[in-house]
Length: 176
Image (cartoon, rainbow, N blue to C red):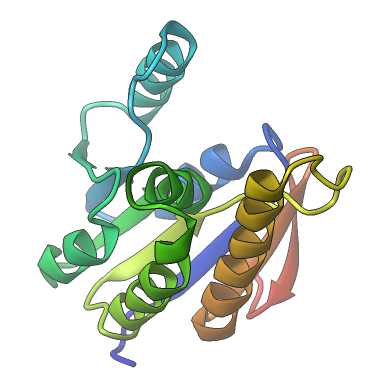
C-alpha cells in the first residue's frame, strides 16, 4: 500500500461516526467528502442537507453512490483527506442497482482501490449484524455482505475505531 493512512470508523446507527470523521479530518487543509447517499425520500434529503451544513464550505463534496472504487482512484495526492460516508449505504446501492450477486466482486474492487489510495481516507461504516437476525433472505444477504465488507476494510486499515454513544474505542492502530 502507498503512504496513505486509512481509518475505519464503525458502530451502530447515529452513534457519532460522521461527527468523529469530521473531527479527524479537521487538521487537513484540503478536505473532500465522498457521499454515497442519494436523496430518495424527504427524510434522506433532510439528512443530506444536515450533513452538508455540519461540514461547512471548506469541504469539496463528491457524490458517488455506486462508483466508489473509481472515485477513490481519481482523488489526487495533494495533501487532502477524503471522508467516505458511508460504506453501508454504498453497499446498499450495489444491492439495489446491481443485485446481491455483485456484492463480493464490488467489495473486492473497493479493497483493491484502498490498496492504491494516494491520500488519507476516513471511512464510515455501520455494524449491522448486532441485532435481530433478519426475517428474509435478502436482508440476511445484505447483513452478511456488510460484515464481509467491514472485515476486509478493517484488515487493510491502519486504524479502526468503534464508536459507542459518541465515544471512540480504538480497535486497531495508535491513539490520535
